[in-house]
Amino acid sequence: MTEAELYTVYKGLYVPNLVHSQQSLKYYEDFSFRSDDILIVTFPKSGTTWMQEIVPLIVSGGDPSSVETIPNWDRVPWLEEHRACILNLEQRPSPRMFSTHFHYNMMPPSFFEAKPKVIYVMRNPKDVFTSSFHYYGMASFMVNPGPQSEFLHKFLEGKVMFGSWFDHVKGWLNAEDKEHIMYISYEEMIMDLKDSVARMAQFLDKSLDAEVIEKIAERCLFKNMKQNKMSNFSTAPREFMDQTKSEFLRKGIVGDWKKQLTVAEAEYFDAVYKDKMKDVKYKFVWD
Ligand code: A3P
Image (cartoon, rainbow, N blue to C red; front, side, top):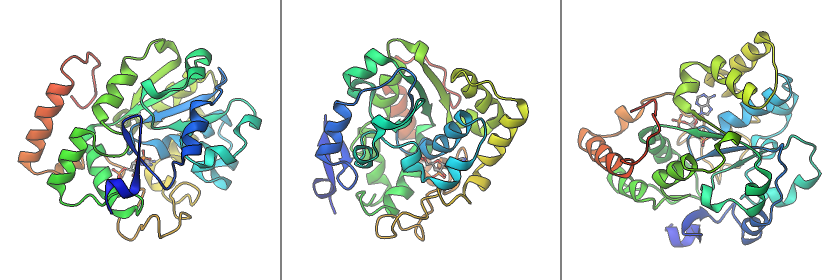
C-alpha cells in the first residue's frame, strides 16, 4: 500500500492512520501539560521503547510493578496516538509520563507555558535508518520500504513517518528554555547505561541509591528487556506487527548500519548529513 493509503499528512508530515486519528491529533493540540510531567521525545527508532522502560523505573524508585504489568504504550503513552484520548490522562497522578515523536514546533501552547521535563533521545541517523528499514518491513500500517536505495532517499528527504530526522533533531536542539530539556543519545546509553540512568534520575530530581540504579540498568539491558512481554510488543496483534519478519527489539546495538548500507550509500548519507547539519554546533557522539 502507498503513503496516500496508509498515512495522514499532519502539519506537513506523514503519520500512520492506524494509530493517529483526527480526534487524537486534536487531543494533542488541546492537551494541558503540567510542569511536573515527564515527556520522552524521540524521532522513531531512536530508543523510545527503551526509555518507556527506564523512566517509569526511575520514577518508581526501582519498583518494577508498572513495567511488569502495563504495556509500554499505556505506561508512557504517545500523546499523539489514539490511545491517549481513552486513557483518562487528566486523572493520572503526577508525575505523569508521556512519549511523543512530534517536532518541537508542533508542541501545543500548554507545553510552552508549563515547561514539563523533557528527555530528548538522539541516535546516529544511519542506525535510525537501518532500524526503520526493518520496522517498515514488519509493520503493516507502514508503507513497505521497497528497495533499500529507494527507502534511503525517502528517509533523507523526510518522506517517512514523522518527517525528516534532520528537522526533528535540529528543532529540538534549538529549543528555547533548554533548562527543562535533557539531551542524551542512544549511543551514550549503550556505552554506559548505569551512568545514563544516574544522570536521568538526577535530571528528574529523583535521588536513588547506587544499588537501585544498578538494578534499573541491569533490567533495561537489551537481553533482559527483550524478555518483558509488556515491552517487546509480543502482545501487539500479528496483523499489525509481524515479528517473524523482524523483531521489534531487533538487535539493540550501535553501528548496525555498517552491515546495512553499501559504501556508496554510506557516502551519500554522509554528504547529505554534512550539508543538512552544517550549522549545528552540538557535538554528537557519532561524529
Ligand atoms: P534496532 O532495530 O536497531 O535493534 P523505538 O523504540 O524508538 O522504536 O526504537 C527501537 C530501537 O531501539 C530498536 O533498534 C530496538 O531494538 C532498540 N531498543 C529497544 N530497547 C532497547 C534496549 N533495552 N537496549 C538497546 N536497544 C534497545
